[in-house]
Image (cartoon, chains in turn cyan, orange):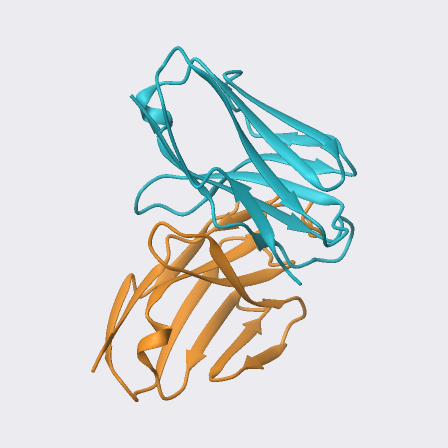
Length: 115
Length: 114
């Protein structure tokens, strides 16, 4: 089973709202990632969690706040977003981080629209 | 930062024909990944290549890594409508291991004509 699940599938929110995106995997993976993908562009890395600790923050604005409550769950808390934040948000996981490369498996994404 | 250049940007192929997509890196490749994406959906993992000269196949798709040229190619034999989509190559952003996430090429949009 190589499934990464994401909820919700679609989300529409106003600029003053607070919402959260959820990502879950039960493969025992110890690295989890958030990527942002704008239309007709490749995914861009936002955050990396390694063993439930934030290891990479790619200069993402503070209106995006990641959280890793346990090894299976990854959340992305959203607050005071801008219309330009509308995008497909993808979660991924991989068995671990280390010297060797490991497969990253992606979820189906959450389509976010900020009005 | 690492850059991945994919070619061609788009490709229209008649069903049953073979095709090749290329991915060239501006830096040393530690891990090269191929994904397929349908518009607006998640990325489907196809293959990961790690070592120079490595070649992997799955069904009718074969990927190769030329470490010296910092290039990878994805070859599809006897294309089918199910092969249509956007093919993305990705590479470990840092020195491998996924610790720095992946950097992606801009993708190749593949259309299969019946």
